[in-house]
Length: 160
Image 1 (tube, rainbow, N blue to C red):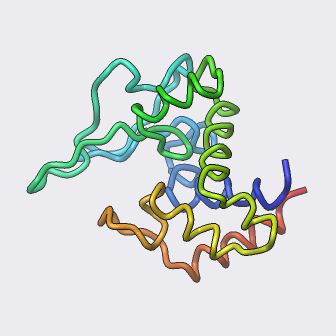
Image 2: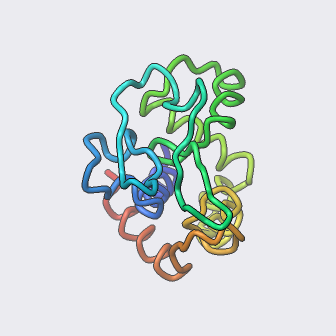
């Protein structure tokens, strides 16, 4: 994988708080969206933890907010169902989560921007996917553009 793409995947995990979660046992690939009852993880990678229904109450509201976000990139179950078929993925393993995230980068043209060195443009292109990126209306907090660009540069330095 190109180091610029790897650094972006690491940035997403960092920004979403999964790879740095104190409870993760697998670099964020096992993290379920933090709910009203606190953080949790999953250990069965045979499918998305919410593939057969259910969700987590994230915020009591008003209105209440429920989510099925899970894994390093906090993919919603409804998107996993589509990508699983589209990309011929069998399980929700870390490698499968990476494949889906890379597909999302490709769909938004962020991969081309990154390879051209346009980190800010890539982040802007992805802001409607990840609530932790600036420029969306998810109202879930998030990181500043400056913080994301600086952290991306640190991750890029670490890629072998």
